[in-house]
Image (tube, rainbow, N blue to C red; front, side, top):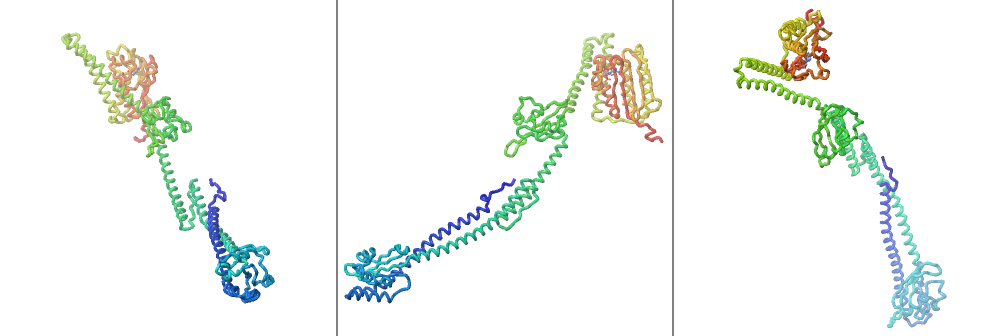
Length: 612
Ligand code: ADP
């Protein structure tokens, strides 16, 4: 906001006042000196004029005074001298003898006083004692004006006493009047000079203040963020240069502003599109910037976090202060809304070392943590699963070595256990290798169009034979087929899908200790085929269902192992089905039986038009 200056604060006022004050001071000094000198000079001139008169009359009157003539003769002679040299100017000359008698005067009105004694006391005294010329001023009491009087001796004898004195009175007042009128002219001239100076000073100060006011306005505009205008340049002086500098500054600030604005926008868009969450705080730890990814991770809105302490937002314990965070900048792992979040901190520090805030990058490592956890449990599972058969092989081989090999009854049984365990281990390792290949996506599917009805039927025929085996005959299994009439040609890897169906059927038999019906269905939906295999076995407890397809997961470890299971069958089946773009799931109730479903993508031939 522009602060309005009062007239007395303004340069426009100060400069003329300064000019005038300086001029008045200069005029004062000049006039005081000049008038004094003029006055002295005038008075000195007047005095020397009186002196000249005195010298003139002295030489003329001296001989008269010193002659032996009578008093009357002398008076006449003096009168003659005074008359001859009568001047028009206002000077009165009086000659007085030693006794104070007036010998003559040039004043016609005072001719009567000739021969009488002078009444002027100072003249009388001077005539008696003064042998030198004396000059002094006095005020004429009748006219009240200043007079200058010169008293000079005439006819000095040997005792330095004059015979007579000449008294010359001059009107010095007129001289003073003259000086005064000159002073008046000087004063008038000074006043005119002051007036002219004032006008000139106002013009000059306007010439200075106008560009300054323009520049002030422009800088105000710049500070308000308006860079459109420019300062008018009035001349090539310092103010002109300053104006040009302000114009250049305005352009530079605009450029800098624009580039910092575009930089900010770029940073904003980088922050917005970052998959990692980013938060920035001020130096007290209050959040000033937060991006959408961070808000998603923390499951809150911008209003919830802006201005809040980062420690509270990240739910750090109360013992953890912002100072500690700045000092350590350690990575922190926090759990929030079932997500595991990794927080990396870095301090925002200026070149001077001043810490102006903290940046926190939040990354969702939930998946990573899960994979890591799975990896750990997988390694422990594999070691455990391999150790169990190896331990039993070792104990059987030890028993054989200790002599059991000679026992014809026990030895074959021991060797058969060793063989079973070894087979199981080989199966497990080949299962693991399969899984590992699928994990690394190395396993290529050898897809071909297969008539699923035929394939499924073929597998079930094999199982029909298996359930007739001695081991299963007592339990009375029945395999029921419920197939769609339509031939379903599906593009699959025949061996792999056979493996999946084999596995589910094997489980159906394995986990149905009391035998029962095994119902196998084959259906089609508009875009997939659906295989389902239901048994009437022990079923799967509800809590176990989500984990059923995990590697090494078994509801009853002992039973599975006893059945020669590896705990990897369903995991492999799931991988295979998913590689085909299909799905596998289970619906089960404990002690009632289970139904396993496999759906595979399917495009009916009529629609594909391949055979048209
Ligand atoms: P396994 O080699 O142990 O059979 P699978 O991966 O094939 O491994 O099966 C995992 C577990 O799922 C089995 O140990 C079993 O507990 C359970 N299971 C699989 N099929 C059935 C089923 N039809 N009925 C009941 N439980 C089943």
